[in-house]
Image (cartoon, rainbow, N blue to C red; front, top):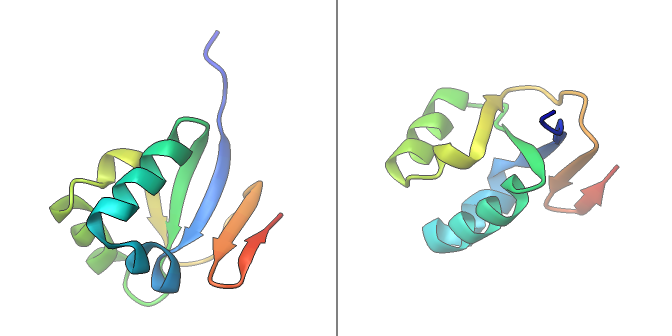
Amino acid sequence: MKKHKKRLCIDFDRVLSCHGKNGADEFLKELSLSYEIYILAPRCPDTIEKWLEENNLAKYVKNVVDKKIPACAYIDDSGIKP
């Protein structure tokens, strides 16, 4: 039986965008081993999806969302919140 991963929601602005492509790759790769990754992009989810594709990062991300969804934790510029 495949283990269900918990959801983790990461804010794009001031979190993922600040890491640059290489930092974001390492960050998302490590987290995706244990979590389903959702990127929170309230202003322009289509643009963020394109950015993820262009930087070969979409493979780590389950979906880009424009609102907070139920998740085990949220990572934003002020830290990690359960």
